[in-house]
Length: 185
Picture 1 (cartoon, rainbow, N blue to C red):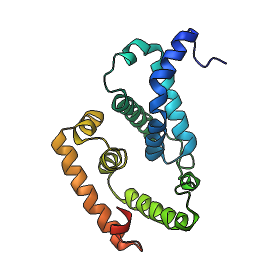
Picture 2: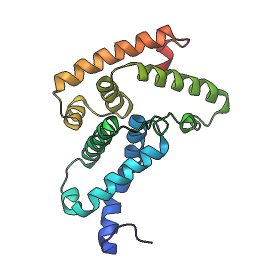
Picture 3: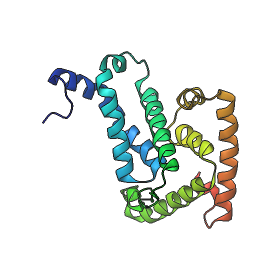
Picture 4: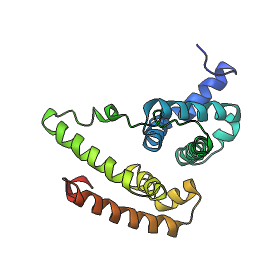
């Protein structure tokens, strides 16, 4: 079954380019939207928009950061559109706790790891969105400060400053909770 309107060769070429980055795209979309179906829709929307631009996509040097940047910009556009909408979609943006069910195969550590993840997610919800984006891209996804600056269209100094402030706030939030930051960060 063909998913895009185009030749089978173009579909294969597109798939070969994008497939190595799909998990990252879904992971980042989920981190931003906190909802499985929203993240799937966001990634699908971006991929659908990128397919006609296959030649441009093939010319990109670092495709992973570029795709995350496109995904982020699309997320921001959709978020702003929802914020201006008179319809309350808070139900659609609710957190999907079941997404963290398969963290560790070792059953003895599973519950502890899940609690740490939930505490960190709660702490991430307490910090500013711009700080959270920097922490997620840098500390969770492993992008360099320069790559984060490129993805978010901000200065490297701003990335470093936000990262420092976000980590401090996360430590404070985790210390105020039941789980110490030394175990979660």
